[in-house]
Length: 351
Length: 227
Image (cartoon, rainbow over all chains, first blue to last red; front, top):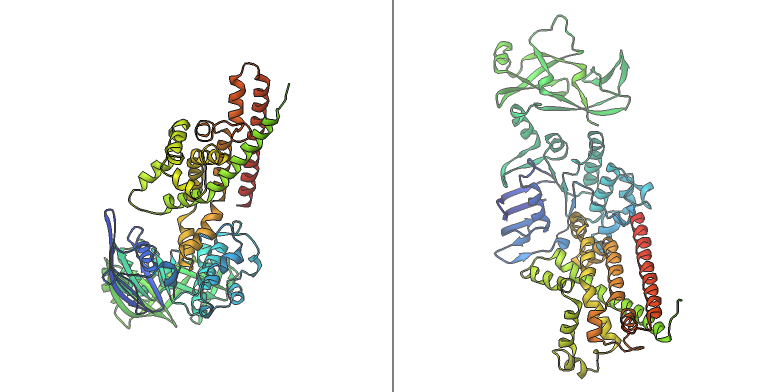
């Protein structure tokens, strides 16, 4: 997928002036609230008309002020999953799902309704009304409805922000699997770096109505580590837990990680802040932290006032954050062997 | 004693006929106008809104006079209508026109409130799912503004039942032809010996109004439950 935008739209004192070209199947748009993310996707979908400029999707001109081209929204085939599920309250789950499907040309209907309903685990809800569904179920219906419209591009406009953390990380696998399984490229909009890293490869950073950066989700997270109160978030997908002295022991690089926030689910996603990893030059005598790992420094990098240390622990990668002085005292350079101490309570369960 | 003359039955059925016809005829126009003022942006929108609401603030007699000027034999539209065989003034159809014009702002206002309560994102979702504007209008906006439509229709029907000032100017007060309940009551009250008949028609009026309000409530509650 290729998106090319060079367009301007003014709303009172706010002006969105977007100028970018991006390619990929999993593109993110990152920015704080009010930066212009939603305006940008509304321009792309044809819900707003730019004051001037051009918009291209896969080489097709969707809008051109110079050539007086403005393809109507319904013919752009850009489906949106909004922050609120925005399901039609007068229709059943099945009718909601089929709304876009019925309106696309028969030759464009590449997705099978029953398969999608099964992937999203919606088979049992089909005859029901949408008003009594839970937040997560509603968002799955909204996702299914958008996908069944067989769009060329699926836009997800902060689809997780109205959900609590538990639901959020239950929905992410659906978002990814639906897009991958049915081969629909997507634009994922969010102000959360963690969501961005889980959902997008290439990321456009929007600030004050402009695209200020084009990078990868991972690079963006590393670059922002020093400015963030919570540091860089290491995302760990761990499996096969067993109970051990009131904690949960998860398999990790040949050894085990002890985590207090675990449970008996066979697989879980945890976050670990770069600020919660303590580095030692030599094996410490006796420490209260329940996890002591060995790691090799892959590289160090500067982020704001902090130094990031990227470490290889067995087959895994972890990022720790240290002060400049600590780098000198511990003589941290690429290839150094270090010990990492992590408290069992430092891990937070995401999903 | 409750008693009704033969012409009173005519007045009751004519009132019902005028109110039903005025409401049904105004509904599509009212819906279209409500759509235009709710969703479209254009120059002169404020002027259109003022014109729509004008009959609410004008005395009905003034509305009746304007209609007479417009639809009368020597009016702006009258000769044109006569040329195609349509005569309105002093017929029951004139009473329908009068009721429709006077009740129209109430209808539009209620439908508009219904439309404004629809989340904008539902309409945007419909469009991005491949529905052109007219498809969205019939599959999303119409069903979701049904409560406003019912409320507006009830108000308009009730207003039509009570319409007096404009009707007497354009339709006259001809028993059995253009005499509706309010006009018949007016005639009885003008005569010193017909007070009983006036009271009887007032009772009928109250009953009709209660039925309309009751139906409005029942349908409204059903729609709320369904939503």
